[in-house]
Length: 245
Image (cartoon, rainbow, N blue to C red; front, side, top):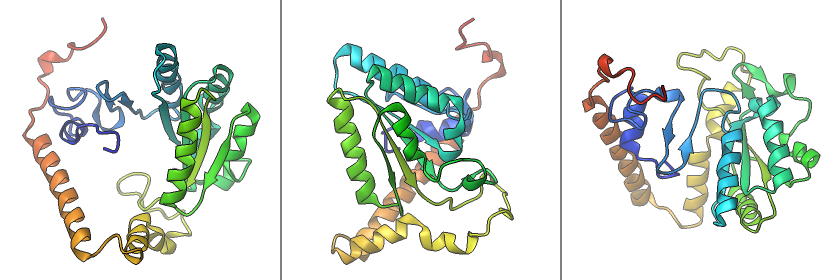
């Protein structure tokens, strides 16, 4: 949504309907929108290698566009993560790598899977900047991302940013999360009310503005769900359409 992917078509794809981004073929795990150069996949660390291709294309065309690849901290132990950082650094590609560290890879804590306390330090192995942002700080993310984007656009190559956040819900619907000792602290770490309180203290938000934002967001979501439900399911007779061979 932040990348301006059409919300109605996004919802329709999640519902597996013909008006979806992939005509209902991709479903909720494999979303792709060529109009906005957006994609995602259920394959761990999948987003990093395609970002290199986009960044290489942008560089060869002489544009100031950049690629941004996002993954979780568990994926930072995959080969695709390290291979992508290495090649992007070697070719000085305009790409920003993001790691969202929510402490858990499904049910495995980061301390039991990763040899370093922060993936940001791994950037040094490839000669690129790496920085970690704590506490869901909106201003810090904006600053660090801005520096990485400016570096990429200046032809100085990639950067790695790790953002420490919190997983508010289970890994899957119905996940009882019995493995988590931190559940009691989750609600108080929710970044939305925390930042709302900061903006209220700064005089940027008031009750009316908050209500208007929430109402607008809810209206957009409900409209997208209605659009998805009203879109037909794919005809089985078209199963072989939209394939390479």
